[in-house]
Image 1: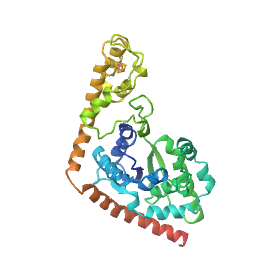
Image 2 (image 1 turned 120 degrees about the vertical axis):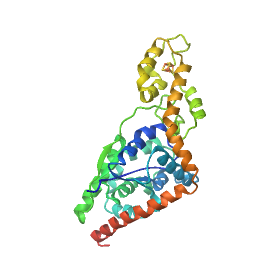
Image 3 (image 1 turned 120 degrees about the horizontal axis):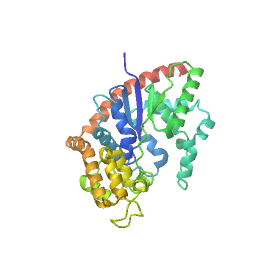
Image 4 (image 1 turned 180 degrees about the horizontal axis):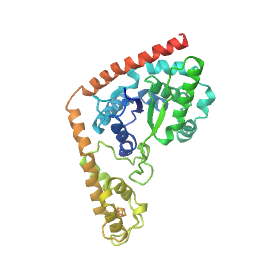
Amino acid sequence: MSKPRIFSGMRPTGKLHLGNLLGALDNWVRLQDDYECVFAVVDWHALTTGYEDTDEIRENTENLVIDYLSAGIDPEKSLIIKQSDVKQHAELSLLLSMITPLSWLERCPTYKEQLRELEGKEIMTYGFLGYPVLMAADILVYKAQVVPVGEDQLPHLELTREIVRRFNHLYKPILPEPQARLNDVVLLPGTDGKKMSKSYKNIIEISATPDEINSIVSGMVTDPRRARRNDPGNPEVCPVYAFHRVFSKPHLEDIRVGCSEAGIGCVECKQKLAETLNEYLEPIRQRREAILKKPGFVREILEQGAKRAGIIAEATLEEIRQAMKI
Ligand code: SF4
């Protein structure tokens, strides 16, 4: 029996950070054995909010593929594609846009939320309003049955399912309703204790060198009330401890007690974290180095991906064109 198919993607908006790794990419790596996976760099989606400045999209796309590969996405097991290489995504998006009522898009919570968040930026475009349709096309062009998502993306997936029901009702029941597979929730703040986000400049990139890790960690915010080495600290309010909680599980109790009884200082505590992070990232670094030694490797992976994905996507489009009599 063939494995169920999964589709997921990320926008090429910069290098990936530890939050992306733990919140999504590590899940993808685990899914590769049980599912037929298509992992995309969704460069058209990057245009929906970043159409004004496209200078870095190509470079970011290449870096994102390197991040995927170095995190453990295996091109022998999974398809890695650039969305704009597989034109059927666009054709399907156009066809689905014909049957998607405007009200479904306007009520999408992330649409309203992003409008608020990106206030001042001119993003009230046709493409921005319609990006959930493009997202539906990304999934449905491969007839993916499963989509790994974070909780915040569930409304989009529900919209995809509504579009599927409408299509199947209007024409022919050929599209599967994709199911959500929730990513593990990992509570990792940014280096300043706020949400980890590129826009807050508080991230730790998965491609950081050991020296960069040492310097980022030594600059991390700690319990602000622990002013002197002899003051007892409160690990619960310290971002360094939040990282230890994720990465230093076997020593967590020692760190908690050490901090609250002033047995360890923040410098030592941060050194331990930097060592642990460097150990954790070492296999990723080694894979990255191996990839960088092979010029043209990323291009080859994307060419192969586009070829194989194109065959699946064209078969779906052929069925869809027939169903729509077009
Ligand atoms: Fe944070 Fe560690 Fe300092 Fe405690 S000892 S405040 S957990 S950095």
